[in-house]
Image (tube, rainbow, N blue to C red; front, side, top):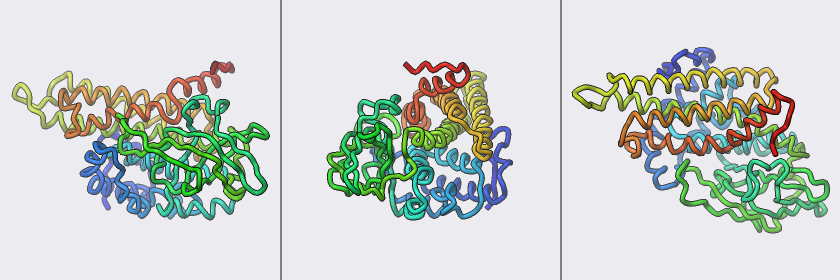
Length: 392
């Protein structure tokens, strides 16, 4: 398959990919354009997820590449970043589904699970045979999850009993397992559990009325005396520091997804500007429209440069929390700015789904807030550069 660099990749960052990686990106790009873009607006409007795309995504390797147990060929963090871009530039909800399935759920097991747990669950998640969710955020605990987690885990012989509530849990209305993070009542430390959603006492209720990522199936979860065997406790998750290892990696993924969302809006605006006639000529020939497009491209280019370096640090094993936090804060802020400019370029047509910019504009709000708000990520970076914590 011929690989063509996106016009929005103005400095040709994708040229750093290997030939095999370029071929995989091209296959995903072609499939998303032919199978997802034509249908996703309708699913977004109906607040439903197109579950029929899970198997093809798995077949394309999208859920497999990051894990030693399942990756079809050696690949780079940069390559996996560009996969996240491709998903989000077509639809951020689809990108978020993959981020939860492949990053948060599978990542929790990969980073915090035992060898036996990794061998059992990662292949099933990578094949799309098992759908995963990640249960950390709670109704009264979001940014303060490190200290404020209220869901409890109590040891009872060879099992654990979980009680509590979770909120904003993506994929949770149809997941087969949810990674539940709970505070051990004995030692006060946060621990992780692989919880089959068929377990008695586990209940997930879809959150309605969202204005962003409408195709993502977020849920409120209630855990009432949910009994989980010790074999399903993540064996290497013994404190919130271990939870943070998962978040460090996935925050970088969100930064890449923010780039993809900005690119999706930018490409919609460029296309519209070339087709929309006002004052007898395409609006692309007007200086003010070109200014909006150039500012948008500048944001995109700067963001790609940052996340490219983050991916290189991931490969080298030198990525720290503050590095991922700065990327997430910066790229989502630039994304938010960019989608607003691109929506503006469409005028009134920028608020209807027909021209796609409206979807990116709305979805950017969720990416801006989840996986750590800009403010919380700023405090992580601020602590690193000053040596002073300012969280409270």
